[in-house]
Image (tube, rainbow, N blue to C red; front, top):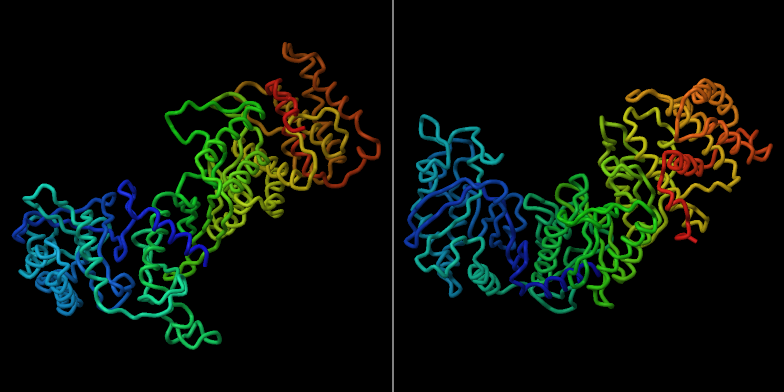
Length: 624
């Protein structure tokens, strides 16, 4: 279980840091979203209470082995908890069928009192205990306006605080100390954390062999949840299937199946939570992707396009690459910046966590490799998949790679107004899991993704927004280029006017026909050209379809003869069509079989050439 050891090492290296944002949780602690904050004075008297806004709700709380894993039954948290556990007057103000919380409150108070009376007690514990034993918290919350009551003085039914019914509220405590050196917010008080850790580790615990460390240590079979966020119930390690016996046929009992020490489990899980909070990427509210380096130095994100990590700093002036050499230079500088900060022996870890069920997490992706190899693979991915596209803001062609989200949406999505979206969340997460190793480990791109993009790019009539289709075309060309490079084939990014390959020449003809017709349109006129109308048919039956397109193009070529255009010679398009046609072998031109995907490259490059792509990037010396 190398991933557990890597996470444990992260915790050991960073647990003493005071600059961790967000906080690296201490052992025996977890997080919860609080809805109410109660302020007390040092005498245990109520001062005020306020509702907690959602952005400030996350609260660090002490937890026991049982409370951290609770899903049913009575298992109070040691300090801050839900109202049903801490309110002695709960039944007085709540008339529902579950209004009797005597057992919950009794278990909570007994546990809190044991901590307060122990040698590891803390002043905050004694203050909160003193207040809660008065059994008046609900009344105080109503009187100060934090809770809403009905005309009978009972808790108002249906009233919610940030989406949570007020009777189900989680309460945290703030204490007004006269000592200004003490931390008022108990969920930020390191001395309170240390107090509970010492108290919780003092009782005798079950000593067994820890499979992770190989040592005999206090073990646990109740492992933390809330891994991806405070509301996450999924667990990575679980052995509580006493009736179904998920381990039957392999082991006799759960002790044989898994045995992990409490200390190792806490540190490993808390490190994972910390990494996710710092740099986790959420895909479709299901898959969580994290990439980290063994010393927690920064690594580039692997799901984004190149310019998204070129220009991470919004204050930085964005200079988009309008030539491929300029793009490669930006890419090399960016990757070198990461390499320069890394130790030569450091490792990069990639992990993807998905929800198998509500209560279970699965590891859909895990790999580890040398950080230098990881960065080389990332650089190669962005170099090999780059293609040009017209940038409306820059008003020029620029080079860029593509985010995994855009690749999947364009391959398997449909047009939704001004954007393309794949509505199948499961499909999206599955394909992210398949593409991530291509970026991080240098694996070959899945052929079905490339085929899907080729099919979508060959059907421009499926898109009412021309920008959407141009995006699909650019991504398809980038993925075709990647596939050709993987197959050790030559793939130029500029127009190759000497190429006599049949599919390439037909792609050029289609581009010329498209440009010739559209250039005769009046300003603001939006009509679909015959080239785009027959685009898909052309890709399948180029010879017979070209005869139709060529015949329908004649009026537009005649119109060009009558138009005064300084940018073109009198018969520019007609001459270009004749030049390209003359490059065909006779048998090739008459071949009516389906075109190879390279025709999309030829179409894209010819369009860019016609519409004034920068002359300086019409060479490929950088690729030789």
